[in-house]
Length: 91
Image (cartoon, rainbow, N blue to C red; front, side, top):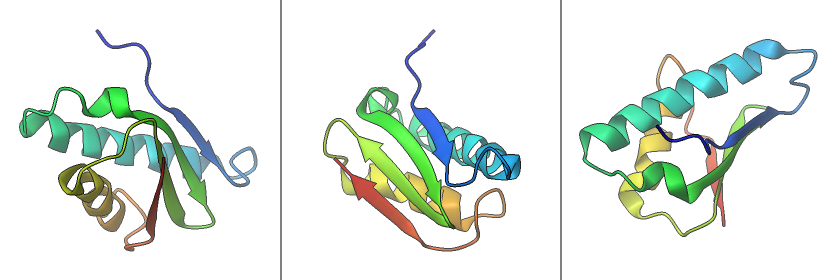
């Protein structure tokens, strides 16, 4: 069992807890995509997910490849996410 999951934060997350819940769903969606693709190292590359006013910011400790970036783009654009393509990546 992997225990070092990324930190999940949101601007105004303390007064808008639904933002944190949305990030948890998006994280699960992205993890499922990575798992179904056989990408076991995916979770080890992540450090933080942050919702900044409707923009998902994904923080990595290693540069993600295009497919790994796409996991979050797909999750954020879905009905469990924000429904937009506002995703940024930081290393």
